[in-house]
Length: 627
View (tube, rainbow, N blue to C red):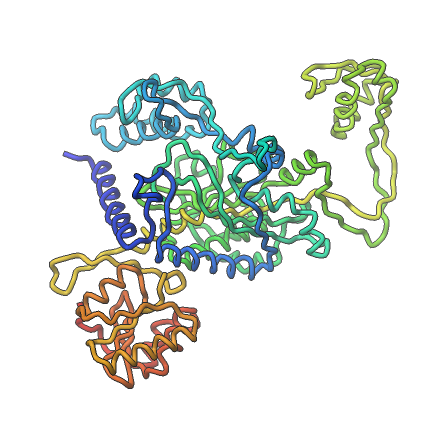
């Protein structure tokens, strides 16, 4: 007999299968290059899928770019190596991989360990409490395991290749970027970008100038990104080419308040701070204003974007009860990040990260400043000059050259890069002892610095402006992941009129629906078809997408066919002067004059009126017996 966990997994798998079958059959998306057997992790969007994606991106632009007056850019997908070297991707953008020792097939090491632990916990009814606790702990620390620790666990649990049951190699790092070369010589290496953000960072200087040298401002980009996933799975959730929509909001690190924070501060939704995760408590509904005032969320600007992301996702049709904002644990956070939250959406695969909202401090602009030599900084001009005490570190290059010869430059740079605390400690030691041991990290050794090699002082200087590197708040949206979760959240089935089959329906909000309405002449008849064509002309003029169906199929079957595409409204031509408009989910109809049809549909699909407003206005009858 299956355990509860086992039956839940089966139910989730069965639900997912119905959704995916419907999506592929109706051409929302299909595996790419299908006639050649397909390629894992690559998918084509068909006509309804393209329309849903276009609608999501159009709303993203409206909700973020227009609302916040962002500067939109469009940068190349092919990126020179030096850019991704500066950002850290060349050295660190890796996953740990294991190989089937006989066939050479590659797998993500953490995925195999995760699957093993979850499988045991879901399906082993006789598992001891101690063992279950151990496996749960492994799942909790999975992201923090080194290659050696992962390898030890794979051996300890006797995990083998899923397909062949052959033994596996030790885990080793694999860089996830697709490598290429720019130009025919092959001497200029490049990569397909793994994210769109770097294109914005390297343009900071010009964007800052374009914005009138004023902070804060945000730049946005929608575009393709590429990751050479080791073993893609989970359909649209883990793919090798995908669409990202990213925002880089540049702000003064000393002032991260936001003038519009009060617009979102009263929102309440599921939040999952790190303390609750560590202590095993569930996510709970929290007021955003309270989370920021208590310091759970680091600052107002980060909180503002968390609120705006919540509104964006729920307007699209994501179920607010299956949406949570999870704070990164200490071991997940990049060393430079001030705070980071993921918008996670629950679907049949579990909780999936769909949007990352991070305060990345000044890391990215500093990294590109160091590598390019171009200062990516902002200026705050003072009304009156200010007297400021400045630390002055003046290496004596002649003495350093005599002492360190070819290493002089590195020693010199290390001295100039000292913090104020380090410099003042060195000054005190040099004055009392005459020399001091000093670690030069670029040489990986200590050197002896003598009193005559460096002068350290504090001077009062007049400054007319403050020069600083801005901090960056980065919301990053995985569009394919959001769309897949939206498909699952929108999908339901209802019985046909006869009750002998279940009909599939996508309850897309009109905002997202691939087609806003369908036009059906009730019967094949010249007069009705002319009226249908006239309505089609009015809809086109109003900019409303529609589908016209003049087949002789029964009206119930035509309704069912378009419900399965998520079309919110069906216009049935049953006279020459007026028509009915049927709403997909309630199946309720209103009767409207032919000349009013386009304006009614436009008002509701663009959110100026609700369907309930139209029911009141047109005194709607009860739901028809149409199916």
